[in-house]
Image (cartoon, rainbow, N blue to C red):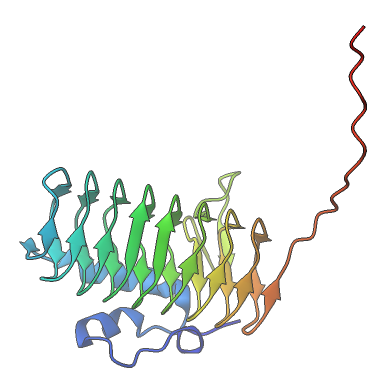
Length: 223
């Protein structure tokens, strides 16, 4: 089982953001997000496209950019160099550390993106923590609620909602799905279309190899 410090490097983070991650277990980071966003005030300094909609308490750093038709609902904190792309949906209690990117048609809810983490195309990220330089391929979904409505087991506790914790430098291929409660160690690569569940060790490659078959096509009967 991974501890928070085994998954994420805290060096260089502003003091107020480091406090979110000062927990023993990665799922406890969600409580830190709650406490941090609860005290935010509305402070929008960045570049916001005229068609974007921002509601509630949103901190937007001076060089952050919000693209066309994006929707941000606070409380949320968007740091230096962050980009929120066209049609992205930022729900309450989202913290984007410097350089993070939420792209076209991606939805993020109650989550922390560490520096340079990216959900660039058609992603869903709920109740999750993404480490430094994490990249989600197009269509990657991080589920945060059991399909049958049960509790999600995490160590000695259970939670109603928790998505995943992805360690620093994890890369996830297109259309992979991470089940609620997934914990992935640093530098791991997850191939496209893989279904991830439970714990995945650091420095691993997780593959899915379906069998493909090519056969001769029959000539259509033209009579």
